[in-house]
Amino acid sequence: MKKITSIKMRITIWYTTLMFILILVVLSLVGGLSYQLSIDSVEKDVILQVTQVTEKLSKRHGGVFELVESKEEFKNVSIYESNGKYIVGQYIYDVANIPFVEGIPRRENVDGKDYIVYDIRTPSPPGLRGGFWIRGVESVNSTMLLGRSAIIIMLILVPLILVLTALGGYYITNKAFMPVNNIVKTANDISAQNDISRRIEITPDAKEDELQHLSLTLNRMLDKIETLIKQEKQFTSDASHELRTPISVILAQGEYLLDIAENDKEKELAKNIVDKANQVSKLVSRLLLITRIDQNRQKIKKEKVDLGVIADIAVESMKDMAEKKGITLSSDITEGIIVNGDEALLLSAITNLISNGIKYGKDSGRVTISASKLGNKTEIKVSDNGVGIAKENIDKIWTRFYRIDDVRNDEYASSGLGLAMVKSIVELHGGEISVSSKLGEGTQFRIVLKG
Ligand code: ADP
Image (cartoon, rainbow, N blue to C red; front, side, top):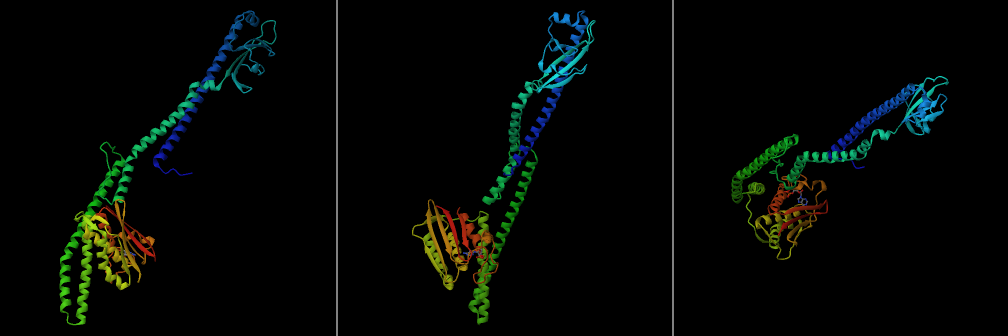
């Protein structure tokens, strides 16, 4: 059986069961008590009737015989001779054979039916032996005693009360747990939309209970996290900005040194400075772009961009790099696939994916770029038959500064910022990027853009 995991459901089941047990206990107590009271009153009634008949008998000179002749009604009383022979009164066959016991009211069961029986022995009138037995009998019908109302309560009211308890309880717990739904929804929205500015909704009529307290605390925590993230982005942006000028100076002076180098040793040192300065300059530019997009400060110049043209430019710029590894670059884009976007940024993203295809491609492999229209969307694919990405790493590749083998790839100036930048550019265009890869077989990046 499936385990019930909802707290609301568990609480409802728990107190409905409790209510059911409570009703059962109360009903059995009330039922038992009223049954006992009914028995007592039947007993009293029987004793009274027997006593009245006995008194009447003692007042008449002719005793029983006069009573018989008077044809008086004996509601629940019968008179027997001392040997048990019936003389007069209400004759109940079932109880006629019950032995007589003087003066003790008792319950007798005959053929499954209960009776209250009470016997009195009268003294013998003059001239007669043995006297008489006066017997009072009243049947005890337990369901009758419990009363119709109790049965109605049991059969109709109890299920009704239980259904109302369950429904009412579920409604109240559901309402009480509403803030939890809001908390879960906000948390899901934050992770799905990467939007830390969202807050848990607290309606003005919300009760000031523990859950409202929790919502307020979480909202305060989100405020704090948002501020910290903003500060961190601002720091990265400021730091990158501050680094740009010194790097440009290092680069310019390194190039000058390269020009005036007089021997191989000096050339090698100057070239090293220029390469590293280029590497840092690229890294800083990427970092700046990513943080600007993060802070919604990146301006986007949207225009009609021909993907075929962009792909050709990207392929052309990567030709030398590909040739060094013997990798075949090809663009398979039919003319006229147009998207609305920022040409420079889209070119940068596509170039980056092609460059990755070469960097992580096998010698003499291939990297292909293709594009097609999917309804009102455009799909761009960059595929390679290179080293591939292991399943456990696939979600991490978008993380800033993440490199799978964490080895600084000097040849290609690997920084771990390429894919983070591509993703930021795609998202800035309102698009989505995904990857599918098989270790040892190859990788395919897929961008879907609106329009
Ligand atoms: P890097 O500057 O290291 O290339 P990226 O952000 O571009 O940084 O990529 C992050 C990591 O994802 C890389 O270190 C690499 O391990 C993996 N990766 C990216 N593209 C590919 C690809 N086409 N094939 C295999 N692995 C790739």
